[in-house]
Image (cartoon, rainbow, N blue to C red; front, side, top):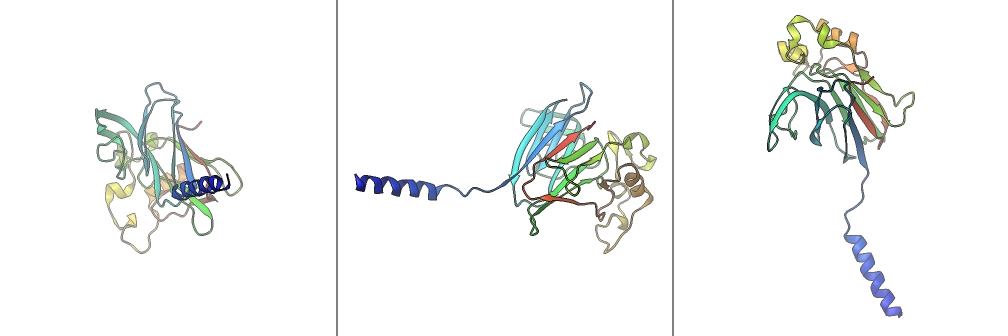
Length: 229
């Protein structure tokens, strides 16, 4: 009986040893709260892929807790054939339903840098690629520092003429492609067009070197909502 118990213990220990290590995961829920029956949003995430969300539908998935430069955005006016090949008017990611590349401006975005050395997740809303869908980003446990962000102004309706685009409002970098885009310059400042975005959505990044990042303890669950109330 004793030897039988030792054998059982040996195989149980071996089985547990062979299991992959359990790691914490970053959980993200994306909700389409847009009120119009036909207002479908095709959610996109890197990593994560993509998903068609009709009004009131949601998509929940997990990302490795050490992932860096995670992005979420919405795509509009999309058409996909069998196999997930097609195109979107805004936010298109290489003509694929399941995104593996960045979206094409204009689109409203959210960004995350997870599990940093200070034990925090960093997150932000971004208009650095323009605007297409109102969006909010909310942590599960709100606090004075770990707070919700929202951009739901009528940016498309008030979009300056040079930035207007089908289905959205472009960022100035996409239109003018100058040094003020901060892609090569060591330092840069806002343009009047960036001020336009910042005035309407002060909680969102208005240009690439904006510093509107917020932090929450690592492992916080987040919710992205299209068309927040």
